[in-house]
Each structure stands twice: as C-alpha cells, then as structure tokens.
Image 1 (cartoon, helix red, strand yellow):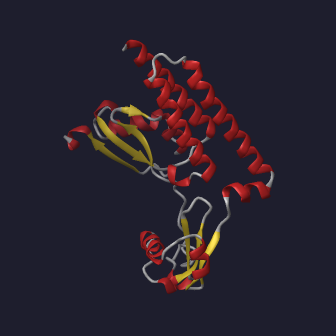
Image 2 (image 1 turned 30 degrees about the vertical axis):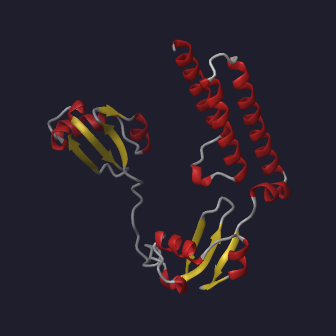
Image 3 (image 1 turned 60 degrees about the horizontal axis):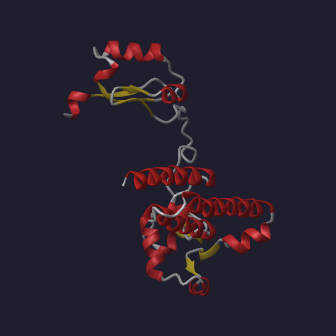
Length: 225
C-alpha cells in the first residue's frame, strides 16, 4: 500500500510538471493534437499507479516521449504555417453580415441550435445583429457584432476617463499579496495607513482590494462570519 501511495505521488508530480512544460491552456482551448496528448497521458499515468509490479520508469518514459513530441509539434506549427493549418485547422466564417453560411456549417457539422446557443451566451440574441461569427480552430465561436449592436465605449462618447488600472487583491484572509501591491504601485507603508485608518490589523482583514488611484475596498473577517 505504501509503495502504491509513493508511486502515485511521484506520477502526480511528474504529470503536473509535464503539463506545465506543455503550457497553460484550458481544456476548451486545446488544439486537436494537444487534446490527444492530454488524453493519452491520462491513460498512461493510470497504468503504473495500478500495477505496482511494473517498473515506474516504464510508465514515465512514454509520458516523457509524448511531452517531447508535443513540444516538437508545437515548434513545427510555429515555424511552418502549412503544418499548423494541417494539424490545428483554420478558422471559418459561419455568419457574415447577419447571414448564415449553411455550407460552412454543414462542413463543420455545426447545427443552427449550437450556433444560436453560443450567440446567446455572448449576449447576442438576434442573428441580424452579427457582423461576423467565426469558428476558431479550437472549436470556439467568436462573435463580432454590427456597429449598431455594439456597446458604446468611452471613446465613442468622447469621455476622458482616468486609467486607474484594475482592482487587485492586496490582502486575502490575513495574507498580504506583494504582487498585488506592486501592480497597483503601492507599498507596505500604504497598507499600514489603511489598517490604521480602519483600526484593524492585516490579520483582521478577510479581503482588501485596491487600484492605482489608491481607492480600496476592505472587508473584515467578522463581516463574513
């Protein structure tokens, strides 16, 4: 039992390392070749975990080979456009100027219900509001609305809005995020001023967010109890 547990931990760490080497992608963003490698790695990892009599190295070598092939394939796809199109596919326009391209949808085995569901998820309920809908190589659908259906921006309204950056988590459950402080251009002295102004310590804070303008939101732990 102990040997099986140790083998499982080793394989677990090895798989995490392998996936980190392959890069960060969500499952829905995987290219076909990447999805195949991910599925094969999951199957290969199960064998040495279940077969305690099998040499551990015999289970790790095939995984290393798959990771190496994936890295080689990624390099070839970056260097050779034709190879990229052949392996990863290419994007296709299925809606142009509010009109559905039935031929393109049939070739991709995409139903109207699938298309409309994706449009609704992106906030578009009328097909005539769509300038372009493009099926990407990973199967996701990108939607570009017509000008009249797009949300107005500050630029459209000629508004001069200051750039305060995005709110960052500075303190989470009593722990300070140095990365959050650096992104907002803040420091420990500012944090000390905030805690003093709110008569609390960092340990009392459940969450503290702030932006570059030093505007912050502070929630104490007792408020979440």
